[in-house]
Length: 220
Ligand code: GDP
Image (cartoon, rainbow, N blue to C red; front, side):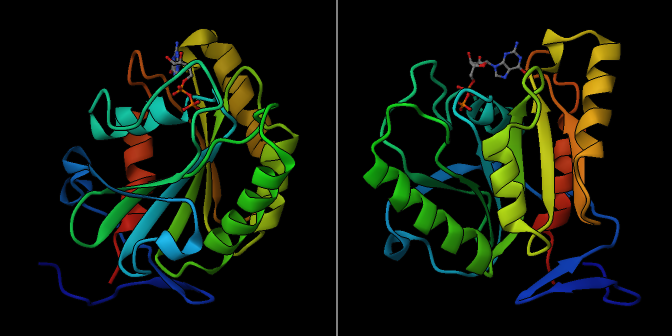
């Protein structure tokens, strides 16, 4: 147990963040297990503890990134066929910490009604949920930040720390990967916005992802 001496905290409306060095070993990503799914705000888990959410275009590699983080092949369903039922999925790491898989966006076939439903639910979730400490937006490194990602980033504004995870880094050369990361960084403006890359094949970048999620999930 570490004492509270000299602890630095940043305050966002309704949210407190620990900015001290984190012992990421204390976060048990491997222990992640499915907790529940939600279609409506009323079905969300109680708004307590700490959560990190993952958003991204369908096929960006979001499910693969979460599975890589928790070292489990099938925790989060990966699929090449978009259009399956969309839900907010909660994965418990321990009693106080959760990962949240948000519905992928950019499906051509989703009805306007469903699109409006998720616009409302996700806006409320992202802007009002106290337990939410950070958002990872998963982006295919070959596509870069697209219009839908940009819309989400501007909707979030300064209300929540944000991390852009550029996935499928093994599809590009080292120099192209670096270039893509720098180009993405240049598109961000907030003090609590960052970028890293990931390959689920080589696991390059996994440690950075663990660090950022670990930092957000460690709360007083
Ligand atoms: P989601 O729809 O955003 O959840 O995307 P998935 O996780 O289902 O991934 C979409 C496709 O990209 C799948 O075929 C994955 O195997 C592939 N993929 C995801 N991450 C990587 C990666 O780091 N490297 C490579 N080569 N393929 C990846």
